[in-house]
Amino acid sequence: MDDYQILPSEPAEVIDLEAELDALAKRYQGASGLGIKVLGLLGLPVSGLLSSLPKEVQGGLATGTEAALKQAVKLAENSRGVLKDQPDWINASLTAALGAAGGLGGVTSALAELPVTVTVLLRAIQAVAVQHGFDPSHDSVKFDCLQVLAANGPFTEDEGADLSMLEQRAGLAVGGAKWIGAVIVPRLAPVLGQKLAAQAVPVIGAAMGAATNYAFTSYYQDIAHVHFRLRKLAVDADIPPEQLVEGMLKRLEKD
Image 1: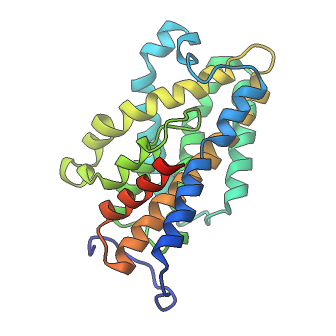
Image 2: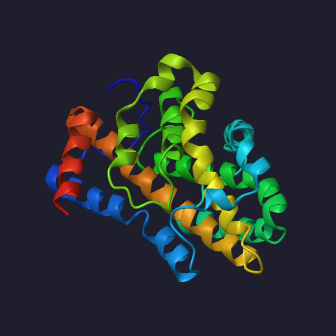
């Protein structure tokens, strides 16, 4: 547990692990709810969004995602000393505005908006890390913030699939740049492709851009809260994170 940089905080609280895991399982279950509702309200399918993108965009998703992510990592890190962390609702509102602007011109403007939105998402995840007592300048926490971006995204109903990221520490062994390309990009590219496809819907692209970005930010903030609360519980209770993840999975299986 000593590979995490914990920020100064109040004395350790008495931990009710059962109540904590119940609350985290509930938050995790609700993370995708807003995204599914957005698609349902507008009559868009949960699956099949990617196939609606132009072939050249589909083919360039991995390259575009990797470029956007590397740019976001640099911008997020450089901006921490200049711009303070914002509350969750402000981050969600900001990305909604970006999504609306990106959706005005269909796929072309949505692609231009992508790096900015990913940067805001990463800063939002870092802000959640700070809320739970972790220092985003520490290498272990940097990797955890990127692991959150490797979650399934808000347009899926698969329960438990994202929790595997909470147990992975591959990035520390592989190295940052290689890890981004080998681990994060293959998972994030299809998710961002869904976002682009939703923004490209004729006539309502701007509205869909705002709605999907709001859903995306809310989703990743919820996943980040689950992720870093589990990490903090692991440190405070001196329990392996894998054991806590297993406890959450058992709760998800019951529901």
